Structures are given as structure tokens and as C-alpha cells.
Image (tube, rainbow, N blue to C red; front, side, top):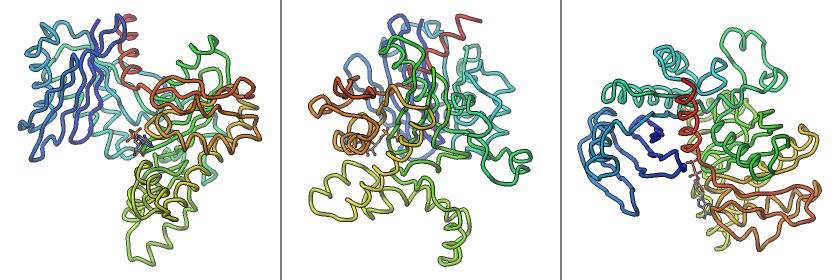
Length: 394
Ligand code: ADP
């Protein structure tokens, strides 16, 4: 069985082709600047990398070239080898609590819910339509970022605001990165060899969210109606006092969406450091004595620790904490700083074991009360697994 996982952005299309007999990646790559001058693609396969500039008018062009190249490069011998395509979809509101076979109704819903993910949902539709055009009979599955979080209860997902905002406009916590948190939960289940455990999954990349999971199900998560809420991120503020928005609107003569844009794109690590959104740059600058970079790092660590502490109580204790995504998988100092602050919870890490990047590792000591792991996330594989499971149960 061969399955393609697709992550379509407004001007990009990322793919991974899996051989599901052993869950290996046969080829992966990225089509960029679709519909913009200077469009190009990269395909990695068999230890090689093909990079080419080519005109990509729309997403269908990208899919057409992708399929042609898979055959030209002898990655597959015919399109019949592709059994299914799984799409990463962003916002399924409270209608989708698991992955679905893509139908016209799913496409209509993506469009209907676009107010909640204005950049992502329309791009997801472009990706689906492109495959429908180029491979009209292909079996397709949609995997929503929000779906995993649908197990949150009312007390968790409601905001303390006028109830009519929820009833009339769907204002509630939805949560994101669900596919990643679900992948982490399933990997921990394998590592612990059981399905009943309390887990705090810390997906900390450029965007970041922390999720409390009991027995494989989401109990609470840090992102909200949109991905702006929760922990401090690369360029996003995370949780703030909402009155800041109107105050800054008046001070700077901006409208609400301009200030929200500042909170999405010019806040977080970038906002406080006034230098970079990238944790590697921040850590380098700290070494050079930059105090704002130090402040940004400390605020970042504090916001992660606060959420872990909150979820520790919510779950009534915790069996495992996992670090994943760009910072979580790679930043040895950030993991160390976070874990040091968790000592009152009985968390202890082994500094030698923590000295790794990007591999599944248990970094806690034998006498730590909580197991701490680094687990590289793999949303693409999760999407391919869901597609396979829908194919098999068709
Ligand atoms: P996204 O949310 O865009 O998917 P990623 O999960 O790829 O982000 O994470 C990207 C971030 O990971 C970068 O902005 C950078 O801050 C961080 N990162 C990657 N490698 C390292 C590293 N070696 N040390 C510290 N941070 C790293």
C-alpha cells in the first residue's frame, strides 16, 4: 500500500509518499511559491535531492508535476500504485472528531468554517481540488488538526463570556496540533506498553501548544478558538489580557485586525527580544550578553512551566511528559530549564541523556516521579495511518 500525505498551504504543497507495509517514507518534498514568480519544487528520494524552478500556476500544476516526477524518477512505476491520499485539514469546528473520507460535504464544511482558519481552510480546499482534478478517482481522507481535542468537556472548552457567543457564533476553545498530540499519545502508549496513562504533550516549535491527555484522549489544550492562545511562541503572544488590544488600537491608531496581526506575527520571542523568533538565535544572543534575549527565553520557559503545572493538577498527577517539535526535539537548554522548574513535581532529568536531538529518548532519571521523553513528532505518518485505516474499513 502506498499513500501520499499532503499539507497544502495557500502557496505551497508539502508531500510525503509512504510505503505502509513498513511505514517508510519513499519520497518527500515541497512545492513552493505556487502562483507567485519564482516557483520551484524539491523532491527527496533514495538519498537524493532534486531541486528545480518551474512555473506553478496553481495547486493542480503542483500535483500534476509531482505525479509525473514520481514516475520519471522511478519512485513508482504507475499512478495505480497510489492507494490513497491523506490531507492535513485545519479547522473542523465541533463537527469533526476524527478523520473522514473526503466528500463534497467535507469540502463545503471547510469553506463554511473558514472564518475560524482564514489562511488554512481555503488552502486545504485547494489541495483537495487539485487531486480531484488530476487523479479524479483517488480515495482521499481528511485529518483535522482540531479533531483530537473534541473530547474536551464543556467546562474546559467554554470561555467565561456571554453564552450566546458560543451558541450563535461558535466561540469556544477548539485547540490545534491535534494530529501531533495524537501521534505522541500513540507513541507513548507503545513505549509504556499500556493505554491508561496521564500524559502532558508539549509540542513546542515556532507555533506551540501543550495538551493534557488521559488514556489517549485530550482533556485540555493550550490553544483556543485560534492558535494565538496558550503558551508564548516564536511570533505569537499566547495568552494576554484582551484589553491590551483596544488600548494599543487607540495608542497606535490601528484597527483590531492590525493589532491581532501584531500579536500573531510580531510578538512572542520576536516581540520581547526585538531580534528573532528563532530559539537558536535567542540562545546565541544570550551567550553574547543580550538581556532582552534572556528575558524572552525566561518568559518562554515560564509560560511552558505554567501550563505543565496547571495540567499536572488537572490530570491529578502525570505519568509522562513529552517534548516534541522544533524546540522540544532539538533544544537541549530549553528542556533543561523547563525540567529544572518542575522539580517540585518530582521531575528529574539526566543531563547526559538530555544531550540529544531528534531521537526518541527517555531523558528522566530512574528515580524521577515522572517519565520525561523526547519524541520527534510525525504528523505526516499519522495522516497516512488514518488514510490506510479508512481504506481498509471501506
Ligand atoms: P513550526 O511550528 O513552524 O512547524 P518547527 O516545529 O519546525 O516549527 O520548529 C521550528 C523552531 O524550532 C525554530 O523556529 C527554532 O526556534 C526551533 N529549533 C530548531 N532546531 C533547534 C535547535 N537546534 N535549538 C533550538 N531551537 C531549535
